[in-house]
Length: 103
Image (tube, rainbow, N blue to C red; front, top):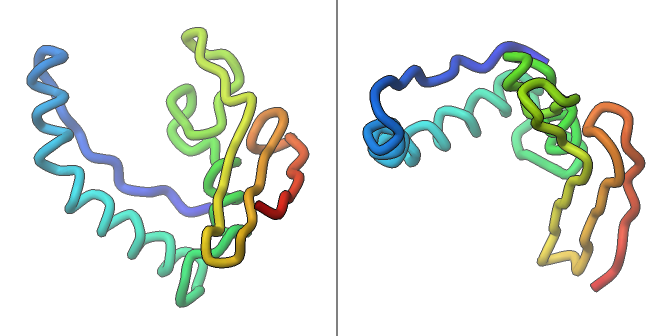
């Protein structure tokens, strides 16, 4: 995966939350464009999302966490409502096992 340019915020917890709230819409749009650019894919599918959930960029604060600061990513969930599918991961994003269920 390529490094995603993270947003920097500072201040009290309230101020940081407010800053994140203001930046959320723009950040999501930038993130989705970054994913498409990084993967060379026109759309974000389940396999791309699995790669994202396995990303260690920014450790110890990466998406896939292995206990730094008491934070673990031990499960993952992805839904494909239009296809009636639900994907569930047991274990870390980088090593866990995915199962697919029809719902």
